[in-house]
Length: 216
Image (cartoon, rainbow, N blue to C red; front, side, top):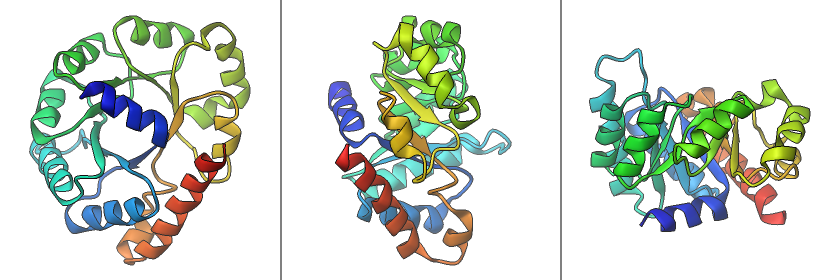
């Protein structure tokens, strides 16, 4: 099962990130990006929400039932408890903003794909050596393409997913550097468009992203 999820991640290459949206707006967003060709969706834990585990688990469960063809993961996972709750709800991969060896180990024990966040070469190698399947390079656009070129020289054997500031305008440039894929949040999960019910525009933006991947 884990290898199947990895195969999908490596084929699709784009993980949509849904942050702080719930209920029908979230489900409608998921349907729109799926129509646009994006089949990977990360639902993040809101660490300021005292009911984050319950609310995120319900969102993952509902999305998995409504869109069985979509592969759902959990994001901003900071603890073993959150990883386990996500697994129980049906999540297939765990994304974190940081490198936490305990969370990486818990993810692997649960049979899920591990995607911890890292910035420096030391953090990247620590995550890899702890058993991460992919490394989320974050915050990517702040670091810049030159930074990726520099760190890729010694660690080009690792599979990097760039996250932070990635959009349709710079996606191709980042992918051309040799990274595996990208996590895309605010540019895709546009809260203004969601609030206005303009899901056709979200679908069109998703299609623009998947078209970029398809031509590479």
